[in-house]
Length: 211
Image (cartoon, rainbow, N blue to C red; front, side, top):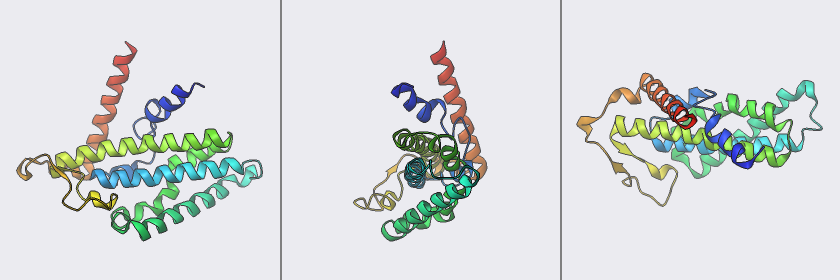
């Protein structure tokens, strides 16, 4: 496979959120703001990259009939480490993401890549598969989160200091006046609507490119 295809498939053509529709619970729940979406995306990318690499290294000694419990053990250990790091160094982000950090253990994307890629390929392929698949999910979450925050709160990058400590709580953009916002888009039905519009827009762009 060409490197360009490897990149394109994971970031765009087979995007885990826009095409495979995997892991939608955290995608819809944590995309009410761009910063929360970015934080969850970074955590997911890190966990995907690390677990894919570890599973690939030990694939020859992991028995086939007990591989899923072993995958879960590796994933849950990595998620626990990430949760503890966030608790220690990014406590505000840790509080904002809440239960969705440990729930990454059950994310279909993580187990799916472990089974379909990491258990069958080299560490290099598995590492970049985890990295690019995670970045694809992060791109999707950040797109949804940015649109929902702009339309629903009238701001962009509010509370950016949750991730970037060198910024203050007042470092964000005001896009709309509070009287012009749409509360619907930050509600759960609004999350589904924005996701649907983005999937339709992606399909439209793909059709234009094919012509």
